[in-house]
Length: 106
Image (tube, rainbow, N blue to C red; front, side):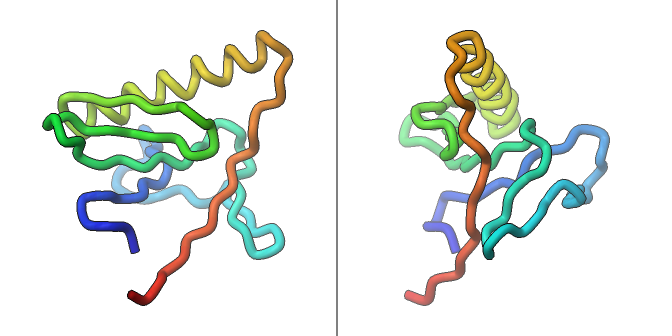
């Protein structure tokens, strides 16, 4: 469970309606991995300044924001694309997307 005010967002899939397309999800050694490198986990939450903050944990330092939640999602998508383009231009490895979802009793 996420702290109050924070939510983990599965990748937003345009044109998929309100359902989630999990066909690209595979389990490897108990860890969820996306088959499609274009899928990234994003954490989005309201910032102290009234803007929404969006982070991509698998890409260190890849953070964006927006006036609305929707703006933050659009902006983090662009930030992720540019981040990966720069890594590819430098012939640097692009980190795989992997994450675990845990429920921790407190």
